[in-house]
Length: 391
Ligand SMILES: Cc1cc2nc3c(=O)[nH]c(=O)nc-3n(C[C@H](O)[C@H](O)[C@H](O)COP(=O)(O)OP(=O)(O)OC[C@H]3O[C@@H](n4cnc5c(N)ncnc54)[C@H](O)[C@@H]3O)c2cc1C
Image 1 (cartoon, helix red, strand yellow):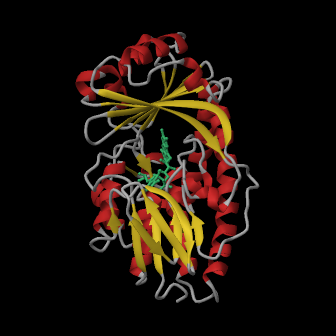
Image 2 (cartoon, rainbow, N blue to C red; image 1 turned 180 degrees about the vertical axis):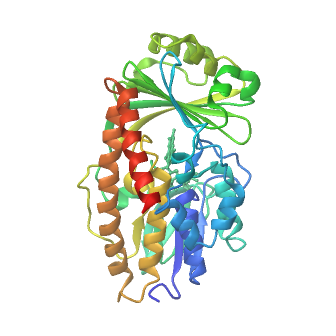
């Protein structure tokens, strides 16, 4: 195997990095994951994730973790309601079977724990905030914020959308999608956002209207995760002057920006038990490519960030991990560089197609008549699902 006797550093312990570490370890590779979080118990933020059959679930199957997944997933979490801005329900699959079962959902925390528990002791080096790296002999010396350093023969960047390693591989810059998200989380949603908690009912809500979107996701810990989507300029966060740590300021912004929406949605901003993060949404050019490097590559959002409106980000990160592990552990290649080149070619083609689908979906959900267009899309997907079930 071309990675025999090579020390591999994966920077970033998100779904992509941890899946890769597990798959490489199963093949006997020497792997460390350098993660900036302080430890395993740091609360993982963000919405529930649906894993897709051919990507996220297939990666877990190959990692020998599919039983652990089904022991921890939330069967009800994929149930979706689609509403307009007045909270009129236009689609409701709480009473039906089909689409939701096809894409089982898991909270980010349990997914991270399943992956962490599968790794050999001391694989993850916590509190390792990567800052820079230099060439060192045939490999790399990595430097961390806490003053420590580590040598690796091969480095894999899995450090997410604002990767510090990506600029060493390519200078291709992200493109602003035109949409900025305000992501938030309301804890104890039954008390703090009772109407919307009831509407979500442990599943998901997609609300659209006036060129804006609001997506809710009920989580296993009783909280309600959400993100608003609005068309604003790239520098709006700075220009708006809003302090996103100040609940009152965020509420005032929401009341104004979503003034054509029902007041019911304001519930998300009223309690004290919540947080917000503004996130401008970027993607990379569909034709991005670079010269492969002999001992350095990237996976997940570091390689292909995109808005969340097709639910593909985590699935792509885990599929990257699966494909990179396959290439690095194959006997088909004479060198690591050849394996990296083959992985990157496959990954870039796939990411380009998925980015295009995501951008189309982003435009649809923030355009005219978004609810009806989304429902038409579901009808097409359901017909395809029924056809596959019958085949
Ligand atoms: C609001 C929102 C909703 C989303 N909804 C969905 C969805 O429904 N479905 C879906 O598939 N995707 C969704 N996504 C996208 C998804 O979260 C990402 O695509 C996915 O998490 C990418 O995985 P990753 O492993 O590449 O990176 P990440 O999950 O970002 O993990 C990167 C890891 O690297 C660590 N790290 C970062 N910098 C450093 C550093 N300098 N040194 C060391 N460690 C570092 C971080 O702490 C983190 O643990 C959503 C994203 C957002 C913002």
